[in-house]
Length: 201
Image 1 (spheres, one colour):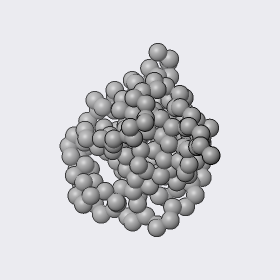
Image 2: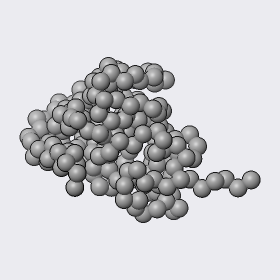
Image 3: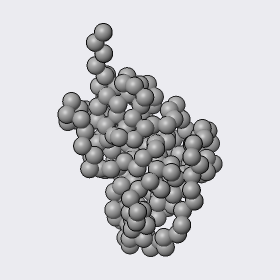
């Protein structure tokens, strides 16, 4: 196992074991109807903060002791739901996740959005298949058209920051997502998503 993977595993283990303080659910700010372009501003956390479109995600990362992990050396890839994506969850679900003590379910949800590797745009465009996440359950990429992860649209690509890549998405990903029947069960490596089949003329 590479040293970087060992370091991330250690950081995640520390985050999982550290006590997370109970969070009081508060009204969340509404996101703009159309997400603005996100500009790289340092590491993953600094970029999310500077954007102003990820306040809910940042609160959730703080509540689950994952902020430090996402400020680490990386490289990491984060599928980042916008505030509008969190606001679209079923009524009461976000408040329940945020108020739980300890917030184990929230943490599991967040690490499902995280990949322990740099997955840049070149590995998504024209590719189709599963990528393993830190939660071990894979997400499913479809870059054969407008890029998607599971059933969420990737609203911006090429967002490379100092410690990895961020993909803003318009929906919170669910670990219970059922992939299309044609999807491979496992590609084993974040860099091994399969090229999408060429369309027949």
